[in-house]
Image (tube, rainbow, N blue to C red; front, top):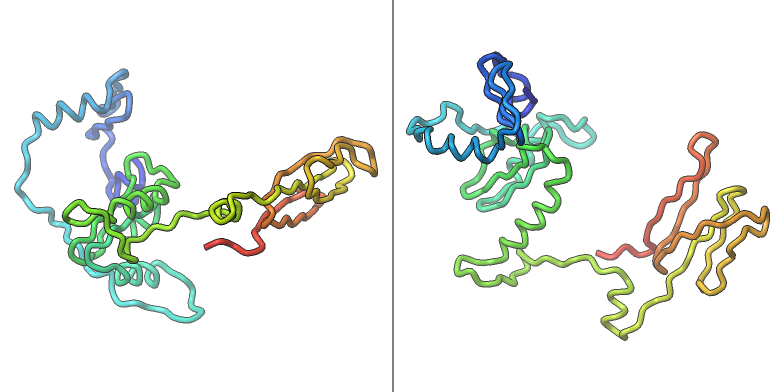
Length: 238
């Protein structure tokens, strides 16, 4: 019984009347049948279950008019209608497991919109690669030809070295952040051949962190967390 299988816990199902088909076992009421594969169970079920011609009584409805503006709090009532109204016909909607999928599951979507969600395992992080894959496949038109229109264009990220190699065939030198884990002495080395292996202050071994030439590092220290390193780019590539 999860938030997905019970409609955000709104359906109060009797466990003794519930069949739970899992990956490697099936549970009927309180009885557990181990070593039963989900694929085998679903294959047999499809052979015995008759297709129903009845239409679902649940119908998609409008999520209402947009409410709130400016600095008002971001609430479900303010957010989901905006998302629903943002969609256009034939869009591909990828929702992550959680509130985004639940909030849009019963929205009245424009014609041709497809709704995708990884409900079975509720794998957090699924939506990002799924969205990229959907966008990639959507570049094929109805004739199964590659579509190079700007609306469907995908531009993969390229770091500064990849761009430079395409121009001159050369790469920028990597830099190394040297950090003493004992006294917190640090330095940036632009020539890996001249690395300072031992701290000049306390003579302890230094840690080496490789960086690209367009990266910058910010270091913070606290008595509770110790050293925190955060990295960013001087000119982020878009």
